Image (cartoon, rainbow over all chains, first blue to last red; front, side):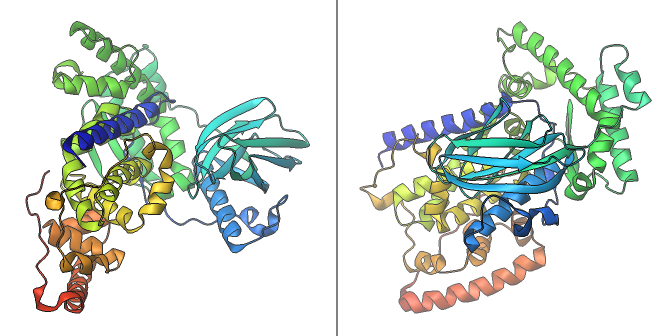
Amino acid sequence: MSTELAADRDTALRAVLVETSAEEGRRAPRRRRRWILGVGAFALAGALTGAAITTTAIASADQANRVFRLGAAAEQQVKTHGILLGAPVVADASGTARLVLRSAPPGATRLAVSLECFDDGQAVASVAGVSETVDCSVDTPAVTELSAPVGPQQTVTVAAAAGGRILAWASWMRERPVPAASAQQNADLSDGRVTHAEYLAAYSRYAGCMAEAGYPIAPVTGAPPFVFYAVPGAAVDAGADGTCYAREFAQVDRAWQSTLSDIDVACLAEHGVDGARLSIEQQLAELRRLGLLQACLPSQE
Amino acid sequence: MSELSDDEADWALAVHGGGEAFGRVFDRHRDRVRRHSLRLVPDVGDAEDVVAVTFLEAWRKRDAVRFVNGSMLPWLLVTATNAARNLSRAHRRHRILLDRLPAPVPHPDHAESFDDGPATAALLRLSAADQQVIALCVLHGYSEAEAAAALGVAPGTVKSRLSRAKSRLARRLGENAGASARTIRGETSHEY
């Protein structure tokens, strides 16, 4: 490959990577976590076994493995904030799959859909007028959740944009009730602003709650003005993480990120950069690129 | 709390939407990943695909990336080694994004490639686990502890795995080209 062609390919690849990451910033804000530790093998409920699956007869070992994987992926996602209910249904179709779920179990609040597309591309999952678009590929299940009226029967339609074979799995689920914020967290929010000290203190209370529950958070590294931390997968599975986060840290965490974004925008504006339309991570990246990270961000407020 | 390294900070930013941060990680490590890939696949065009797949896999597994002394490079080298072993599958997984890149073309001059002859041929016949430890500890000069951190295994595991891998590599070299086999060229300058 000539040097020029190699440079073109590098430039194009770099642009793809930058765009891929930036796309993440345009989605709903994620919790500022570096990774979840210890997510490994997990037990599957009986509802995920072939015997309980309806609609599609399992025709081969490969298909059975894929169905198992779809269910496992859904279980892994949902367990952070809820639980799967009842028997899932599966459809193996070309282009568009239809899954009919009968008799919502007591407590069901929405649907979890897991899918695999044999031609990479986007897929649209729809139920009762609600749609979600997901990136869909072979071997790596995509999972989404849909709000749907709980009734005697719901039909989920999953259409693959590329039109090829699609394997889809759906189940009713119930969301776990979100614990109320602690009195201290409410006090932190009472004056309408969150300081860095309050953010760090709320993180410490969250970490303490996790330790009390038997899941100490480690390792912890800090890059002011944020705390980056890892959470044991078992804590997510057990619901301890969701409980502690909601009780001690969630609202303060979001408020601090919002406050920080305002500071970023003001600081970038002073240096001639319009950061209003950037995600907070993009704002931080821009500050870092300009060498302004330490100068602009409060560390001891 | 300690300061994050450039790789750790950029990755944390990239994972949350700081696109340019991913670009900086790419700028920092693409050349080392490319040189490593050229050892693992015979075709320069395939090596370019390994480079692309390596960074796309890093994004796909973004919550599982490991840092060794603050550097993402060892993890990227392991990922490249794995991608090279099953390039067609990796290519299929990322086909949509790879199709957006200019097509790599065969290199008319092999002077830039890292053809280590029989040694490379012997390396490519090893198992994935053997290739990983040889790549990290022999080709790139990482310590057993560093390789263990990159692979997510105990240092003792790397030590025993490396010993066996070296023995198997020596046997393969003997099978391949007898005494004419050259030593695999290594790189010991770490870029943290």
